[in-house]
Length: 278
Image 1 (cartoon, rainbow, N blue to C red):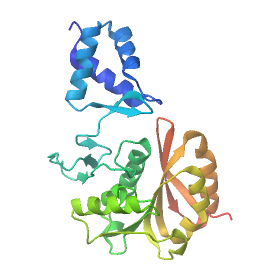
Image 2 (image 1 turned 45 degrees about the horizontal axis):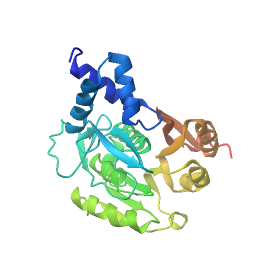
Image 3 (image 1 turned 90 degrees about the horizontal axis):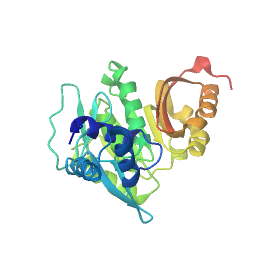
Image 4 (image 1 turned 135 degrees about the vertical axis):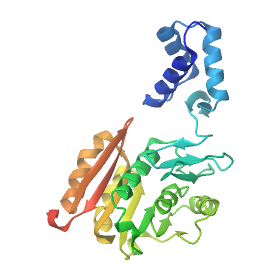
Protein backbone atom coordinates (compact mmCIF):
# COMPACT_ATOMS: atom_id res chain seq x y z
CA UNK A 1 0.00 0.00 0.00
CA UNK A 2 1.55 3.32 -1.07
CA UNK A 3 0.13 5.23 1.90
CA UNK A 4 1.20 4.72 5.52
CA UNK A 5 -1.29 2.17 6.92
CA UNK A 6 -1.35 3.55 10.51
CA UNK A 7 -2.17 7.03 9.20
CA UNK A 8 -4.97 5.72 6.99
CA UNK A 9 -6.36 3.53 9.76
CA UNK A 10 -6.36 6.36 12.30
CA UNK A 11 -8.06 8.67 9.81
CA UNK A 12 -10.78 6.07 9.29
CA UNK A 13 -11.30 5.65 13.05
CA UNK A 14 -11.37 9.43 13.60
CA UNK A 15 -13.88 9.87 10.80
CA UNK A 16 -16.24 7.25 12.28
CA UNK A 17 -15.85 8.59 15.82
CA UNK A 18 -16.53 12.20 14.82
CA UNK A 19 -19.53 11.54 12.61
CA UNK A 20 -22.95 12.71 13.77
CA UNK A 21 -24.56 9.93 11.74
CA UNK A 22 -23.79 6.24 11.48
CA UNK A 23 -21.21 5.39 8.84
CA UNK A 24 -21.94 2.71 6.26
CA UNK A 25 -19.09 0.74 4.65
CA UNK A 26 -19.81 2.57 1.39
CA UNK A 27 -19.38 5.99 3.01
CA UNK A 28 -16.08 4.93 4.58
CA UNK A 29 -14.85 3.47 1.29
CA UNK A 30 -15.61 6.75 -0.50
CA UNK A 31 -13.82 8.71 2.23
CA UNK A 32 -10.67 6.54 1.97
CA UNK A 33 -10.73 6.63 -1.81
CA UNK A 34 -11.06 10.40 -2.03
CA UNK A 35 -8.70 11.23 0.85
CA UNK A 36 -5.89 8.77 0.17
CA UNK A 37 -6.52 7.69 -3.45
CA UNK A 38 -6.66 4.03 -2.43
CA UNK A 39 -7.92 1.31 -4.74
CA UNK A 40 -10.68 -1.15 -3.83
CA UNK A 41 -8.33 -3.86 -2.56
CA UNK A 42 -6.37 -1.42 -0.40
CA UNK A 43 -9.58 -0.07 1.11
CA UNK A 44 -10.80 -3.61 1.79
CA UNK A 45 -7.52 -4.39 3.55
CA UNK A 46 -7.77 -1.29 5.77
CA UNK A 47 -11.32 -2.11 6.86
CA UNK A 48 -10.51 -5.77 7.49
CA UNK A 49 -7.54 -4.77 9.66
CA UNK A 50 -9.64 -2.32 11.67
CA UNK A 51 -12.24 -5.00 12.37
CA UNK A 52 -9.60 -7.65 13.15
CA UNK A 53 -7.86 -5.38 15.66
CA UNK A 54 -11.21 -4.43 17.25
CA UNK A 55 -10.88 -0.78 16.39
CA UNK A 56 -14.26 -0.84 14.66
CA UNK A 57 -17.10 -3.32 14.46
CA UNK A 58 -19.98 -4.06 12.13
CA UNK A 59 -23.46 -3.28 13.45
CA UNK A 60 -26.82 -3.92 11.88
CA UNK A 61 -29.98 -1.85 12.19
CA UNK A 62 -33.21 -2.02 10.17
CA UNK A 63 -31.53 -4.15 7.52
CA UNK A 64 -28.60 -1.75 7.03
CA UNK A 65 -24.93 -2.36 7.86
CA UNK A 66 -22.78 0.21 9.67
CA UNK A 67 -19.23 0.54 10.94
CA UNK A 68 -18.92 1.87 14.49
CA UNK A 69 -16.18 2.26 17.07
CA UNK A 70 -15.69 -1.06 18.83
CA UNK A 71 -15.96 -1.44 22.59
CA UNK A 72 -14.91 -5.08 22.48
CA UNK A 73 -11.60 -4.10 24.05
CA UNK A 74 -10.52 -1.83 26.92
CA UNK A 75 -11.42 1.77 26.10
CA UNK A 76 -10.22 4.80 28.05
CA UNK A 77 -13.21 7.08 28.54
CA UNK A 78 -11.70 9.81 30.72
CA UNK A 79 -8.47 10.63 32.53
CA UNK A 80 -9.12 7.97 35.17
CA UNK A 81 -11.84 5.67 33.80
CA UNK A 82 -11.37 2.76 31.40
CA UNK A 83 -14.24 0.50 30.37
CA UNK A 84 -13.36 -3.10 29.65
CA UNK A 85 -15.17 -6.29 28.64
CA UNK A 86 -14.89 -8.90 31.40
CA UNK A 87 -12.70 -11.23 29.35
CA UNK A 88 -10.05 -8.62 28.53
CA UNK A 89 -6.97 -8.27 30.72
CA UNK A 90 -5.94 -4.66 31.30
CA UNK A 91 -3.39 -3.19 33.68
CA UNK A 92 -4.42 0.31 34.74
CA UNK A 93 -2.03 3.16 35.33
CA UNK A 94 -1.66 4.54 38.87
CA UNK A 95 -4.85 6.35 39.80
CA UNK A 96 -6.82 4.80 36.94
CA UNK A 97 -9.84 2.56 37.51
CA UNK A 98 -11.16 -0.21 35.28
CA UNK A 99 -14.90 -0.69 35.09
CA UNK A 100 -15.81 -4.13 33.76
CA UNK A 101 -19.11 -4.11 31.91
CA UNK A 102 -20.84 -7.03 30.24
CA UNK A 103 -22.87 -5.58 27.34
CA UNK A 104 -26.55 -6.42 27.38
CA UNK A 105 -29.93 -4.98 26.54
CA UNK A 106 -29.62 -2.18 29.09
CA UNK A 107 -28.21 1.22 28.24
CA UNK A 108 -24.74 2.16 29.44
CA UNK A 109 -22.03 -0.06 27.96
CA UNK A 110 -20.09 2.98 26.72
CA UNK A 111 -21.16 2.88 23.09
CA UNK A 112 -23.31 6.00 23.26
CA UNK A 113 -21.84 9.50 23.64
CA UNK A 114 -24.15 10.30 26.56
CA UNK A 115 -22.66 7.48 28.66
CA UNK A 116 -19.14 8.69 27.97
CA UNK A 117 -20.10 12.28 28.78
CA UNK A 118 -21.66 11.20 32.08
CA UNK A 119 -18.51 9.28 33.00
CA UNK A 120 -16.29 12.24 32.15
CA UNK A 121 -18.47 14.56 34.19
CA UNK A 122 -18.37 12.15 37.12
CA UNK A 123 -14.58 11.86 36.86
CA UNK A 124 -14.24 15.65 36.78
CA UNK A 125 -16.47 16.02 39.85
CA UNK A 126 -14.72 13.43 42.00
CA UNK A 127 -11.22 14.37 40.91
CA UNK A 128 -11.82 17.87 42.22
CA UNK A 129 -13.40 16.73 45.50
CA UNK A 130 -10.84 14.23 46.76
CA UNK A 131 -10.89 15.57 50.32
CA UNK A 132 -14.67 15.45 50.62
CA UNK A 133 -15.07 11.93 49.23
CA UNK A 134 -12.89 10.59 52.01
CA UNK A 135 -15.81 11.22 54.35
CA UNK A 136 -18.20 8.39 55.13
CA UNK A 137 -21.11 10.57 53.98
CA UNK A 138 -19.80 10.74 50.41
CA UNK A 139 -22.68 8.82 48.84
CA UNK A 140 -24.13 8.67 45.34
CA UNK A 141 -27.50 8.18 43.65
CA UNK A 142 -27.67 7.03 40.03
CA UNK A 143 -31.10 7.60 38.50
CA UNK A 144 -31.82 5.22 35.63
CA UNK A 145 -28.97 2.88 36.49
CA UNK A 146 -28.99 0.92 33.22
CA UNK A 147 -25.90 -1.29 33.14
CA UNK A 148 -24.69 0.12 36.46
CA UNK A 149 -21.64 1.73 34.86
CA UNK A 150 -21.95 5.13 36.57
CA UNK A 151 -22.47 3.74 40.06
CA UNK A 152 -19.56 1.34 39.61
CA UNK A 153 -17.26 4.08 38.34
CA UNK A 154 -18.28 6.38 41.20
CA UNK A 155 -17.44 3.83 43.88
CA UNK A 156 -14.16 2.90 42.22
CA UNK A 157 -13.26 6.60 42.25
CA UNK A 158 -13.90 6.94 45.97
CA UNK A 159 -17.63 7.11 46.67
CA UNK A 160 -18.42 5.08 49.80
CA UNK A 161 -21.98 3.96 49.06
CA UNK A 162 -24.11 4.17 45.91
CA UNK A 163 -27.75 3.48 45.14
CA UNK A 164 -28.76 2.81 41.54
CA UNK A 165 -32.47 2.94 40.78
CA UNK A 166 -34.34 1.99 37.62
CA UNK A 167 -37.99 1.35 36.83
CA UNK A 168 -36.94 -1.17 34.17
CA UNK A 169 -36.57 -4.68 35.68
CA UNK A 170 -34.30 -5.67 32.77
CA UNK A 171 -31.85 -2.92 33.74
CA UNK A 172 -31.84 -4.01 37.37
CA UNK A 173 -31.36 -7.63 36.31
CA UNK A 174 -28.29 -6.69 34.23
CA UNK A 175 -26.83 -4.10 36.61
CA UNK A 176 -26.52 -6.46 39.57
CA UNK A 177 -24.19 -8.94 37.79
CA UNK A 178 -22.02 -6.01 36.64
CA UNK A 179 -21.78 -4.83 40.24
CA UNK A 180 -20.74 -8.35 41.28
CA UNK A 181 -18.30 -8.57 38.38
CA UNK A 182 -16.54 -5.52 39.85
CA UNK A 183 -16.81 -7.01 43.39
CA UNK A 184 -18.76 -4.03 44.74
CA UNK A 185 -21.84 -5.77 46.17
CA UNK A 186 -21.16 -4.29 49.61
CA UNK A 187 -20.98 -0.72 48.28
CA UNK A 188 -23.68 -0.57 45.59
CA UNK A 189 -27.39 -1.27 45.96
CA UNK A 190 -29.58 -1.71 42.89
CA UNK A 191 -33.24 -1.03 43.57
CA UNK A 192 -36.64 -0.12 42.14
CA UNK A 193 -37.29 2.85 44.41
CA UNK A 194 -39.35 5.65 42.92
CA UNK A 195 -37.38 8.90 42.89
CA UNK A 196 -40.32 10.89 44.23
CA UNK A 197 -40.24 8.76 47.40
CA UNK A 198 -36.53 9.30 48.10
CA UNK A 199 -35.83 11.80 50.88
CA UNK A 200 -32.21 11.00 51.72
CA UNK A 201 -29.53 13.53 50.75
CA UNK A 202 -26.80 12.56 48.30
CA UNK A 203 -23.37 14.05 47.71
CA UNK A 204 -23.39 13.12 44.01
CA UNK A 205 -26.41 12.41 41.83
CA UNK A 206 -26.03 11.15 38.27
CA UNK A 207 -28.79 11.03 35.66
CA UNK A 208 -28.25 10.07 32.03
CA UNK A 209 -31.81 10.74 30.90
CA UNK A 210 -33.55 12.67 28.16
CA UNK A 211 -34.12 16.42 28.33
CA UNK A 212 -37.85 16.48 29.27
CA UNK A 213 -37.21 14.12 32.20
CA UNK A 214 -34.22 16.13 33.43
CA UNK A 215 -36.28 19.30 33.29
CA UNK A 216 -39.08 17.68 35.26
CA UNK A 217 -36.69 16.35 37.91
CA UNK A 218 -34.89 19.64 38.59
CA UNK A 219 -36.74 20.59 41.79
CA UNK A 220 -36.50 17.06 43.19
CA UNK A 221 -32.79 16.87 42.46
CA UNK A 222 -32.23 20.14 44.29
CA UNK A 223 -34.19 18.82 47.25
CA UNK A 224 -32.12 15.62 47.66
CA UNK A 225 -28.68 17.01 46.79
CA UNK A 226 -26.64 17.66 49.93
CA UNK A 227 -25.28 21.16 50.60
CA UNK A 228 -22.44 21.83 48.18
CA UNK A 229 -23.25 18.51 46.50
CA UNK A 230 -23.17 17.78 42.76
CA UNK A 231 -25.48 16.68 39.98
CA UNK A 232 -24.01 15.08 36.84
CA UNK A 233 -26.41 15.20 33.90
CA UNK A 234 -26.25 13.72 30.42
CA UNK A 235 -28.70 12.87 27.66
CA UNK A 236 -29.15 16.46 26.50
CA UNK A 237 -28.79 17.60 22.90
CA UNK A 238 -26.76 20.71 22.17
CA UNK A 239 -29.80 22.80 21.24
CA UNK A 240 -31.43 21.92 24.57
CA UNK A 241 -28.51 22.99 26.76
CA UNK A 242 -29.39 26.67 27.21
CA UNK A 243 -32.86 25.85 28.55
CA UNK A 244 -31.41 23.22 30.89
CA UNK A 245 -28.82 25.67 32.22
CA UNK A 246 -31.45 28.36 32.73
CA UNK A 247 -33.74 26.01 34.66
CA UNK A 248 -31.10 24.46 36.90
CA UNK A 249 -29.33 27.72 37.65
CA UNK A 250 -32.63 29.36 38.56
CA UNK A 251 -33.28 26.57 41.03
CA UNK A 252 -29.94 27.13 42.77
CA UNK A 253 -27.41 25.04 40.87
CA UNK A 254 -24.20 26.43 39.36
CA UNK A 255 -22.84 24.81 36.19
CA UNK A 256 -19.15 24.04 36.76
CA UNK A 257 -18.44 21.79 33.76
CA UNK A 258 -19.89 20.96 30.38
CA UNK A 259 -18.63 19.03 27.38
CA UNK A 260 -19.95 18.26 23.91
CA UNK A 261 -19.71 15.00 21.99
CA UNK A 262 -21.27 14.96 18.55
CA UNK A 263 -24.82 16.34 19.03
CA UNK A 264 -24.88 15.58 22.76
CA UNK A 265 -23.73 17.48 25.84
CA UNK A 266 -23.09 16.59 29.47
CA UNK A 267 -23.03 19.03 32.39
CA UNK A 268 -22.07 19.09 36.07
CA UNK A 269 -23.92 21.32 38.53
CA UNK A 270 -23.00 22.24 42.10
CA UNK A 271 -25.75 23.05 44.58
CA UNK A 272 -25.44 26.60 45.88
CA UNK A 273 -28.13 28.16 48.06
CA UNK A 274 -26.71 31.65 47.47
CA UNK A 275 -27.51 31.48 43.73
CA UNK A 276 -31.09 30.41 44.16
CA UNK A 277 -33.54 32.90 42.60
CA UNK A 278 -36.82 30.97 42.83
